[in-house]
Image (cartoon, rainbow, N blue to C red; front, side, top):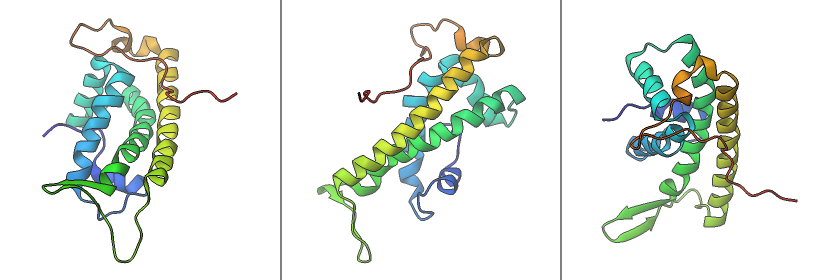
Length: 165
């Protein structure tokens, strides 16, 4: 099993994801968030250093400061990515929609609204992280090292939404 920066329980505690949501849904989402958002945010080299420290419970003060920015970003990206998976399930009969007797399921436009909201928050935290790393780049030498072909170089602009004029 891959190492995670945050646990499923931490995700449930600091978001409005219900405590009874199945961990088998959330664990792959947390791994995907790390792969698709956090590695490009930090770059492979710095990411591997931070993840190694988190895994061995030896996080330096400097990297703890960085994690204080990364974790909220990861929480919001995870919530964004979890929303469709919590509504739709791939079953042997096809794609099924979860429903309950006591509540009504959100429609696709409502889910998209919630996803956009979480993504916007995640992008703000991601940009704060990038700004912090650029400001203190001398303290994070792995952030600026040139990545090899099989490594991910950090991205500098984390906003994906268009600009409204």
